[in-house]
Amino acid sequence: MDELSRRKMLLTGGALGALGVLGAASPAGARSAWNWAASGSVAGSGAGTDPQWVWDDEADQLLGAILRRGDVPKVNKLLRTWTRNDQPLPDGLPEDLRQFMDKARRLPSWADRNKLETAARFNETRGFYLNVLNGIGGGMLSTAIPREARAVYYSKGGADMEDRVAKTSKLGFAVGALDAYRPDGTCVVEAVKTRMVHAAVRNLLPKSPGWTDTGDGQKIPISLADMLVTWHTLPTYAMRKMREWKVPITSAESAAYLHVWQVTAHMLGIRDEYIPANWEAAEAQSKQLLDPVLGPTREGVELTDILLGQLAEQTSPGSVDRPLVNAFARYLVGDRIADWDGIPREPFWEAAIKTAWPPLVAFREGLIKLPLVPRIAWTIDEAARQYILFYLSKGREVHIEIPDTNRPA
Ligand code: HEM
Image (cartoon, rainbow, N blue to C red; front, side, top):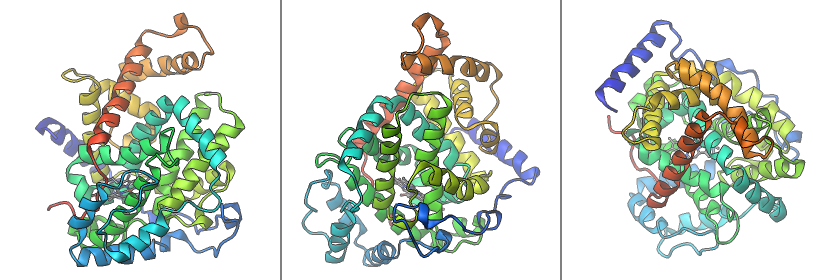
């Protein structure tokens, strides 16, 4: 971050802090007792345990052992060569890890190939919106989730956000690819690697003074409730926004899109009894889990500033299009969250995007003719394309890797 944006961040953070809102959101305290019915899950029933007190025991213990044995560098080196869903695991992995991964890579019994194919086509045709929503919108939501912002900030990857975003996008693009869960796809690989990354983080972050000092008393990060919170910033939020934008979606497409994310949730280690079976159950769960935990943090404001700064650089190198990026991010998540993220107001671009985006979507969907689209819409369209292209190509250079340290102090 350059000096100017650092100062701006400190100022924004300072203002928020002075208002007494930083750290005001206390996930554990704010949310009501867990009463989401497991009958609405893909499992159809469950013990009813609050996922706030559930993690991923098997993976967490295993990664704890791998870390203690100092095996992480060796494992990461081998995992770099594991890139396709149908590929055997690399030779030389520690036996306990191999056994775990052999199990973890299996699709759930309820995975439906036909639905996954429909989802892949939907992801392809609606890729433009989905990448914008999952990448920029989801990113801006996640920095307004205090637990996630702090976990990301104080973990190893928090020190290099460009690299981290590229790695995170790797899973997003894998889910959105036409071959996602086909034998030649990469979704299983990236999801299993991510599950192991999270398990490592659960072992590492409790040793970070920064994380421990700013937390809300949580002793182990990334509970399954936290996982579900983030999951809702992806499919639940994206589907809601696409409906709001009046993107035509058939019921088969909407069910299939949910399905690919249900399967992904399972592959990430979320128990079936917590994975919503339909959109109604997803919305109900999102209301219970996500809505009450959103709020501002110093870390979230800093991460947002870095992310938007990067976005502006990537979409328009050398120019001063940060205001457009700020306004677009605000448009995607709304004023309340944008304010929590410390995103500056941009009156000109905010008005332009409000006017231009709906006709741009309508034109892309063949609902209106070109002359009805304001010219400014193509600037936004181009910026979004550049963003997607950047992370698609960047993703090819990076690998999701298990961390063995936290962010350096
Ligand atoms: C790493 C996705 C939930 C914190 C990652 C990575 C991916 C990912 C793809 C690997 C990229 C990398 O190594 O940087 C997801 C998805 C989630 C989810 C799809 C939910 C559906 C969460 C939650 C938290 C979290 C709830 C914290 C509360 C982290 C951290 C890392 C990570 C700290 C490691 C960064 C590092 O290596 O330093 N996640 N995540 N994630 N995630 Fe998540």
